[in-house]
Every structure is written in C-alpha cells, then in structure tokens.
Image (cartoon, rainbow, N blue to C red; front, side, top):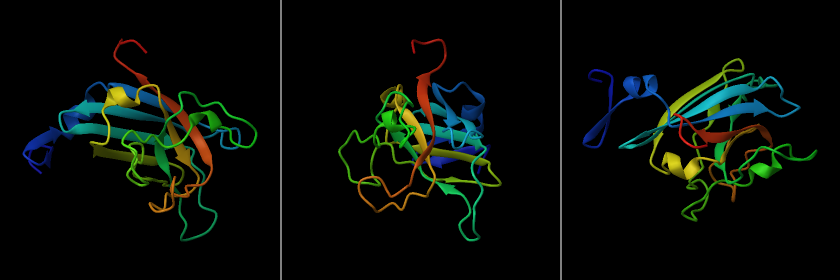
Length: 174
C-alpha cells in the first residue's frame, strides 16, 4: 500500500486518517446478564466509498473446546433498543436489518463475524450495504455462535449475548 491508502476501484480511502477522525455514529456494546463482562464500542465512519465499521469488544466468552475458538455472529438489527425478557434478553433488538428485502447473508445488517482472541475482538471493514443515516437508532447484536452464511433467515448464529444502540455523534441530534 502507498501512504496507508486502501484502494477501492478508482478511489482510495485513507484508512488511518479516517479512523483517527471523528466517527459519525457509535454503539456502546454491553453483554446480557449471563455475559456481564462483554463491553465494547462499534464506530461507523461515512466515506465516499461506503461506511468503515470499526469494532472493539472485550469480555467475550472463551471457547469451551479446541477447534471452536470464539467466532461470533455480528449483525445490525431492526430494533431500536436492547430490552428483552428472560428467554431472550435482547428480544426488542428485532431481526436482521434488511432494507432491500434480500435473503441471508445479503441483508443490510449482515456483517463479518467477530473473531475472539482470549476474549478480545477487533474488526475493521468497509461496506456499501448501508450509509450511517440508515442505521442510526438501530441495534448492533453479537451472537454466541458464528453465522453460517446459509441458514434462513438469520444464519443460525445462536443466542444474542450483547447489544448496543447506534447513536449519531458529533453534537448532532440523537
């Protein structure tokens, strides 16, 4: 790469400078009562090429058996809060955001999985599936299982273990 540029078609995104700038939206991630140690932040940066999503989450559960290290489903859901009930602590988060009525894994809210490393996961990627304004007020969910990218409608990602509401940043109305 030249000067820290990530090339996308004919345009380039200066990833380092974008991530050093101010995100347009963020979600503070908190675990359910069963996973109280999960904490994190997901930042959303609007660029001309799409949205850069940067996630940093700690306190993820460690794998209970070898060859199944912590890989966690990661999605934007339709709901506007992280409330729930005894069976599903984040039931109010709703289902995967799907603005174009596509099958899974082509939903607007289908994101790459998080890969846990001794309870920590860090991820950064560029997507053109949504713009920041389309996701403000929605929820981000972490599931206890990896998304299989096949099963309809939600990828068989298991239980919701953490949630955060995406809020606009920068002194703009929330």
